[in-house]
Length: 299
Image 1 (cartoon, rainbow, N blue to C red):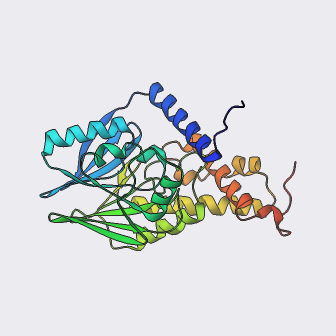
Image 2: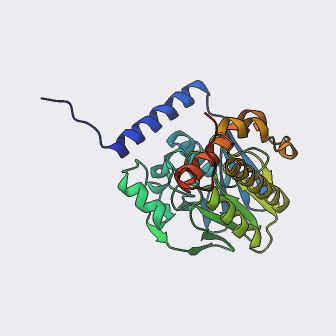
């Protein structure tokens, strides 16, 4: 008898989980809880962040990150606040943020996700708690004297990625497609550069928020998000214009410095990879290679 071959989605998940396992073994998790503003807190597990809000009627948590991280947070919340966890909200579908949901679901939390995130997690049989509640465009969860406003802004990173505004503290939380104080991740794997720009513009067009918390990197404010948008636009325009002039990827990586953003963490390491990500998007999604007005780059 021949060996069974895993379908492509399961192969992808197996590879992702193996990579995660290797990373976790190489770098032990460091957990931390810090108050962001009023009743809103940031939970840190290694390089990852999620947010939770404590109210008179219970707690709303967001991405569990990993089963171990979720277990740690559940125990810490019980010891520190002695309140039930009422809701778990997934930011999007990616496994590196959503594994461990069963820890909160088994404790009685209602699981919430955008319908596209929930669909992808179901189709790929992601081993985490499925969503109990889904929504299409926006949803407000009220708990005690506080609430969280969830909004979908279209494609940006993964499937069903949403913004979360925690009120009345007025803290904005977005995972992956906005990062402050650091470059976007490597070659933008899983990202849509057009959607990142459009969705970030949408966030900035909303009523002002006082604090921004990302799924990675630093805590910031609205000006930090505006600066991030400036970087995305400059990156996109620089790569696009280089391609329209017939430059190769290597030539653009050599000439496009975007030095006004050299204060960002991972600038030297990831700028060439960011350029590669936009270049690949323009080739594979925008079909620059099929355009007669785009000169062929030198070999």
